[in-house]
Length: 328
Image 1 (tube, rainbow, N blue to C red):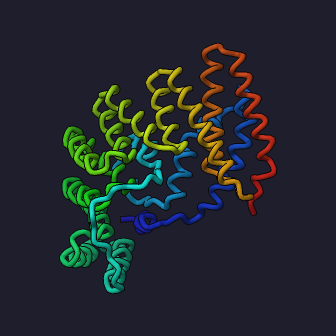
Image 2 (cartoon, rainbow, N blue to C red):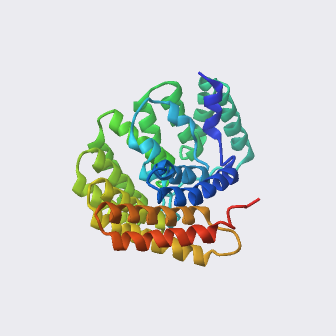
């Protein structure tokens, strides 16, 4: 196995600041380009850029992306890659604090990164023999089975154990959903997440997971019900954006605009609350994208008056942000 790919698995937020800077500049540039029909290619890349900003921001692992050749939405555009900060009611777990276990974990990670998963497995299993609820050991074993051994059944088992310990591990949730699809076990996955949800009924993450599973299972109504519930439970712009994009995908422009407006409102409010001299790139990007999408929908539906009003908002925001992109 390519060691370079292996080492990306443990990457944690490297280059985040540089990425934010580049993306911020792209947002301002895209604002101008989008409103010129002959040059709007940057606009089409913004959805993926928003997702990537989330991924970098939360330091998620990358190695799992080389495990399968799936052309699947959850790898690049999954709503589960959009974390929230809602307080979770988690299943009790014993946290590892002793230095010996930390040394073992580091040794196991290093062995994986140098292409020696069998040796890493032994160390991780030793950790679990003393502490069966060690989340890091469970997760790493899951990825060893998924990536190194190509054993999706065992990976599924370990990922489910991870989520019984911490049902807010979004990286594992995303990959577990992909495994359910790969193994044609969507109904089983729905049952598993419904059980998790019973212990965290107010957690929007569970609704997002169930929405993804029902969408993959071709049940659009149930999927949208869960996505809407997630948005209603969350006060974050990113979760409103998820619902807006889903409505847009399914051709419901009126409802899409409603949630793009909610995204705009929440992102703007967050920017005001957190205004401390440093721009919040995530909220600003969500605000920009929600406005772009409103403009697009109004323009495509022939509502020139509303499209022009949104266009004016975009141009005003772009002018205000010109002096903020030089973050140094």
